[in-house]
Image (tube, rainbow, N blue to C red; front, side, top):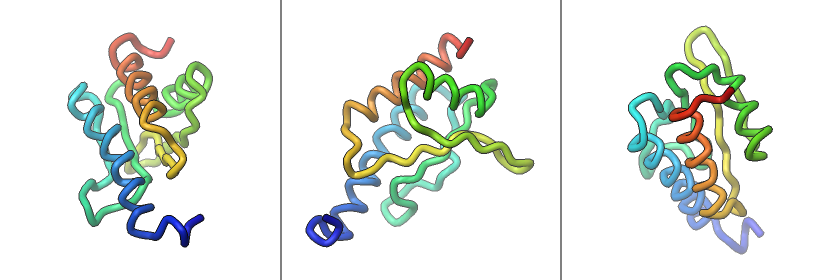
Length: 111
């Protein structure tokens, strides 16, 4: 599959998905910070976000329990947030569901 798709197309797809959710969340709220450097020559699928006022572990649990969105909460002395890593199989609708879920958490909380 990887050889059939080709590295360039695979990376382009992953960056498209990452940029879709990252752009939408940065536009939605100044509380959302994307800590992954974005750009055509930066990172692939992986993105790391933090939401001011929301604990990453609780946000990660909220996304998993309510929306079944797999994520990786990371709490470190220098940074904290959740890592999101879509695959080439991730659909645009799934990305939009993630965006809507984070917007809900920002707007209404995660309790």
